[in-house]
Length: 148
Image (cartoon, rainbow, N blue to C red; front, side, top):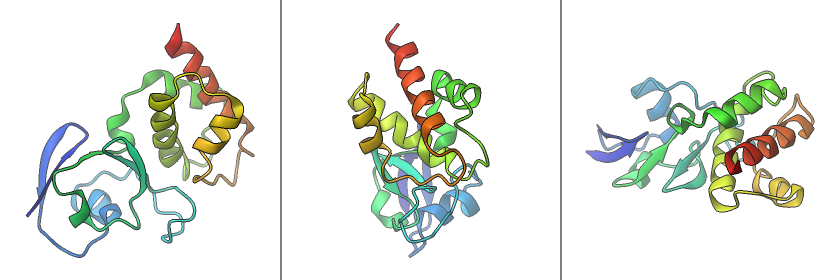
C-alpha cells in the first residue's frame, strides 16, 4: 500500500505503476487536477508534494509514499481563488488548477514577488487563453491582499 497525506487527510492506495495524476482523478475522484499534455510540458497537472510544485503526470504514485500532497481542492486560499476569478486569470480552466498550485508555492517562498519572480515561478505552467497578464495581475493582487 502507498500511504500519504492528501489535502490534509491520510489516504492509502494500492501500490501500482500508476501515475499520481490518474490515482488522484480516477481512484480518488479529485478531478480538479487536469491533464494537458501528459508529458510534463504544460503544468496543467501541477500539484504540491511537500510544498514543491510537481507534474503529477510524470510522478509514479509510489513516489508519494509518506509525503504531503496538495491539489487544487486542498489549497483553500480564498484570496488567490477570488483574485483569479475577479481578474480574469481563469478562463477555460485547464491550466488554472496547476497555475494556482504553482502560485501558492511561489507565494509561500516569496510573499511579495516582483513581476520577474512571478514569471520565473510560473514558467512551468502554460496558458493558451489569457496571455498571462491577467494571471500575473491575479497573483500580485493575492500577494498584496495577503500582506495587508
